[in-house]
Structure formats: structure tokens, C-alpha cells
Amino acid sequence: MIAKKIIASITESFKEYIQKGLFSRDFIGPDQEYYAGGRCHSRVLGLIIQCLLRLGFYVDVERSIYFHTPKINGKRRMNKFRPDITAVDPADHIIGIIEYETIDATREHLLHKIDYFKRSLPANLSIKFVLFITTLPTLTKRPNTWIEKNRSTLVEPLTNKFIQLSSSFPEVEFVFAYLNEDGIYLNLIINGVIKEKQKNKIFK
View 1: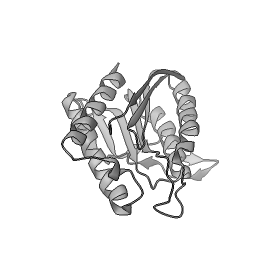
View 2 (view 1 turned 135 degrees about the vertical axis):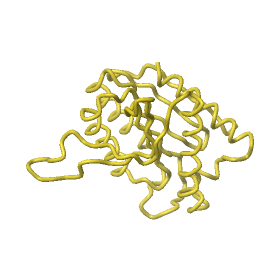
View 3 (view 1 turned 180 degrees about the horizontal axis):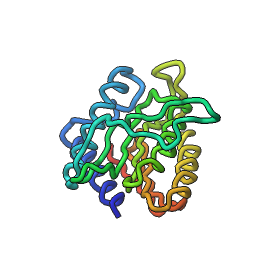
View 4 (view 1 turned 90 degrees about the vertical axis):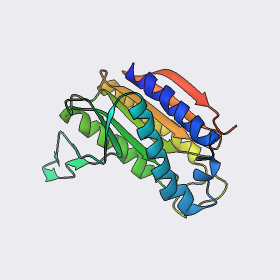
């Protein structure tokens, strides 16, 4: 499975960055707002790109992905989006979509991203895997007023929505992962079923 190799590579990369002091709890905590937002996003994207290159993938950053249905109820809506990273094969076919969201992503924003995946897949039949990582620590204070204190409450609804999405695309491997104050948690989902769960306490 492609996704299992990606999960292993991501875990290896996080451990390497933490050991070298290039990543820590500070990146996902509420104390330093800018550090936890913009800096965290750029560092995690760099880490994921490294792990994909290690596996032999070619990588694009913010490449446009077109939707299958640009109109809804007769009205034109967004007809494409630009995921953080796309993995491509040597023939330049998109084979993977990767999105990462930091601590400041709202519930609505996270759920909308899953809808973007749903609308992208029918128009891009070459896609073999979708990886969605978000930051969901148990916060006791807010870095911004709109951010939920306990973001761990989002784990269940996001997981369930990813399971629903997976059941509609049985040929695609889905990984829903999240970072919290302990480490990274990864769920491999295929055909509407969680095939594997991993808990990697990378900060300890």
C-alpha cells in the first residue's frame, strides 16, 4: 500500500526533526501565535515534501486541482483548489493530494477541505491517495478568539467524514492524521473502514 509507506516515512521525518531540534511542541502550542501558525505550516510542509522525495515521488506545491462539478444548483462555485502538495508520477499525472492545517484552522475550514477532496477525485482519476493532517491539541487557552480551546473534540467528526468520503472512493487510500501535544496520530482508511491506527508519541 502506498499510504502505509507514506505513514512510515512521515513518522520517521518527524522523529528526525525533533531529535535535531527542528520541531517541538512549541510549533503546535498556543503560546506563540505566529510560531504556531505560519512557521508551523511551512516547517511541516517541508517535512512532508522530504518524506515524499525519500519514497521516490515527484512533488508539486500548490498545484491547481480541478473539480468535477464546477456548478451547484445551477450556480457557479469554486471550480478548483490548490492543495498544499500534490504527488505526481513521471508522466505528470497527479497520484496524491496532501493538505496540512495548523492550530488556527476553524471547524468549518477543516470540513470544507474534505469537501474539496470529494469534488476533486471524480475529475482526477489518477489519484491513488489523499493525506490530510491537522493540528488538534487539547488547549487550555486560545491563541485567537475563534479557535476552540479543546480541539481534540474535532477528531471524531473529521474522522467520520473521512470514513464517509472513503466509502465513495474504494480505490483510493485515505490517511487522516492529526498532531497534538503528545505526537502524531495516523488513521489509514480504505473503502470506508479504518484499516490501521498508529499513535506515535514523538515528543517523548
